[in-house]
Image: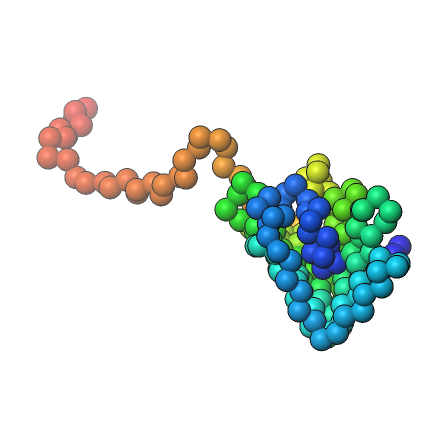
Length: 193
């Protein structure tokens, strides 16, 4: 199995961001800070090195190295690599008051399929739900997650925590007051036999 991690590189592809991402982010400028950059226009390869921080609207991606390529059709592929720190990303979800964030050893994003893949020590958090595994794939077009365990997980298995969701129109339950028992002033004594 490939040893891929996090999806830092996909941030560099923000112009074709997944549908789950905040749509307004697509119209915002991309800011990239790095210690060094190499741009090969002929091969359509951009490589960013050292403390790479990419921001576009609500999206933030951090990595030690990021490589972004573009094919003849304009589709972009990005790969982000960890070094001293894991690859990290965070972005607000469209239509929700919550963020999706994750980290891993390496991340890949494919704009053609709107798929993010995290490899090695992968961890994704969406709202209060979390998934941990050796590999996590997320397709933003279908809102489909897939995760696999492996050697880089404590048990070799996937671990997920999924919080209960409120049904539409359901109000948050309020705590029930305890029943108070008091002696009755009107209770008659039982009949004598």
